[in-house]
Amino acid sequence: MEHEHPSREGSIDELWESVSGPVLVPGDPDFAPTVQPWNLAISQQPSAAVVAHDPRDVSEAVRAAAAIGLPVAVQATGHGVGAVADGALLIVTSQLRDVHMDPVARIARVGAGVLWSEVVLQAQDVGLVPLMGSSPNVGAVGYTLGGGVGWLARRYGLACDSVRSLDVVTADGERRTVSATEQPDLFWALRGAGPAGLAVVLGMEIDLFPVTAGYGGNLVYPPELAGEVLRRYRGWIADAPEELTSSVALMNLPPLDIIPEPLRGQSWVMVRGLHCGETANAEALLSYWRDWRQPAMDMFGEMPMSLIATVSNDPEGPLPGVSTGAVLGALTDDAVETLLSHAFPKAGRAPFVQVEVRHLGGATARPPQVPSAFDGRDVELLLQAVAMLPDPQMRPAVDAAVGALQTAIEPYATGRTYLNFLEGEEKVRSAQRSFTPETLARLAEVKRVYDPAGLFRFGLDVSGAG
Picture (cartoon, one colour):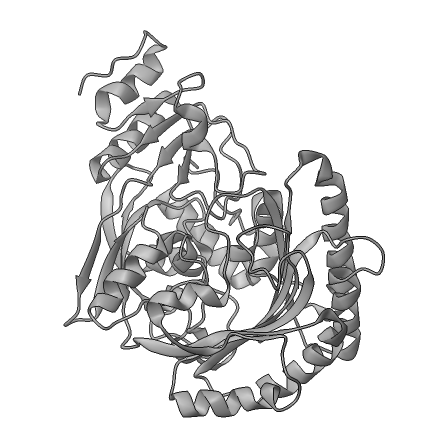
């Protein structure tokens, strides 16, 4: 393909000659929007970017980068960035958007650039559903390989356990299919640790499940009941059936038009979740709350799986923000008071939009048929806190609030975290403590085998040290 660019260094010319997709460098009109992650608070400055149009582009870009001495970073949909790609060749896989359904085998084949909304809609057309995330606008592949804790988790398990095979390009530029029987060590590593600087993932083959509808939504209570709600939530989940995946969220909703008028610009506590069994059983479970106190809003009800994203109502477009998280040992009274003091401070507006505790267990706690690198099967409670950064000048205040919450919750946390909830430097720092020493050692060996020269340097640190 002819590339109509002004003359540049010969090293970059090698990329122009070898790939069919556009090659962008700083100063090109499309460079900045192409390399920008979904989180607008994170910026990166790669040396060049290749927008891959097909798998061959990825292979050729990897080979060219090795030849000219550029390390390789990868960006699909831009979600969940770890180490920023400064100085790298950034391979952008957002255009690999093929989705294929096999309803007889209950399998979907999903490209690296595909969002969950596309997979859910096509699966629902044939009466099936993937183990999608809470947001329809998150990339399916990245979410899945990071673990994948969605609203069907307690019934059907983690999304990473639903992967049958992966289509990848390794550091030698070779395209490979990895599975339980083909390069099983790499297949193990990619599921749960994410690409982790091990390979460029082109797509995945995943299981689908026969669910077309559920009973889900939110019960909304005023903030003065937040303590009672959190303590009552402990009792609700103590013997919850696996059909119910739930959370409780302390919300400070911004005064934006996308927020329903009764909730806009105010603080609330929300009990949310999805029951994927019989409606009568779901309503019996909800009577625990409805018979206790009349919520300000009751948004629970029957819904098709195509509307599952309305349970969380995550933002659709890119935003600047900060996300942190932790694994909680238990939701003790002291832990409850700590969360309340940071989510709903007594003076001034809370910098957090959301502080949420998610309940796991059930199918997530059982070992999968094919082992993976995910090290969180004993986790019962996940904490995530999200703050927005509409003004960069708010960064010091938000960072201080995040740090204060992290310090305050430490006595009630296990020291581990769920990496899909983190971004940027915190994600990189947290990788070492998110895996056991045994898992880290095995990941380091997989890295040595498949990327001995360290071409992929912008994933998680899986060196096994520290």
